Length: 288
Image (cartoon, rainbow, N blue to C red; front, side):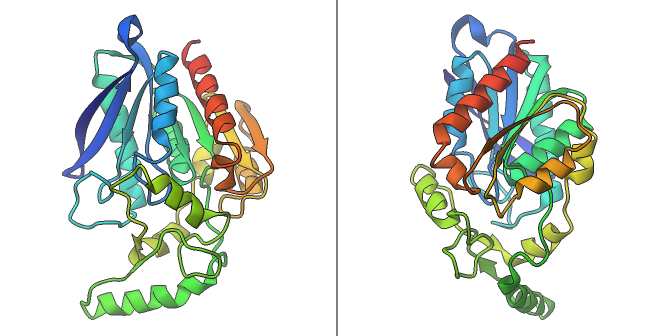
């Protein structure tokens, strides 16, 4: 495979990306996918294995860091701006569609958790996306799901009201710790994945969190008409499978693959199987 470091611009911010291409004849007008990390992650986490296997199957991959994360620019760091992240997905699609090496009629999107929600949204909005693979995708949060964050959010709002620096909070913590995610093996998984991701920081701005409570991909999911692969973890408390199934209830093109474990155990206990089924599905759909 061939890896090219590249950039594109979102809201005037330089976004860092890597384009992974098949070698040889497979690199000529090949199909492609695009993706970005899950919540607070960077493109060196989890994604490279998928990109390598996709390249072996003749499919190119574009993976990027969100503005403010990893190698991407942005003066405000570690702040999750969900509309901007979605705009980044649309910009990544534009990059692939303009590349003469890519067959613009065969482009798909995939994502995990938060980026799985973005993948659903961009596939619903842009007909250039021909298929979407959503692994434990974000649909919406449960407002009462992490009540220990409420005092931190209030403190942060008061600090910013009086023009003091806002607070940050760990993205992943152990059970009982104050963090945006402290269940389903979040801390252990993030630490394992961070070993190959020098730009990863286990923190997000507290100001990121209130807007997340209002963010939903449910309506976008209901509008999907392209082929959909939904991979679920039946014990997931972060992106509950029942919520995903409800969102896709009227989508005739969805295929489900389900595992008994929790959110992050999906990528430890079943990492190879999830990667294999996702890659094979994408290669198959883009070869049609």
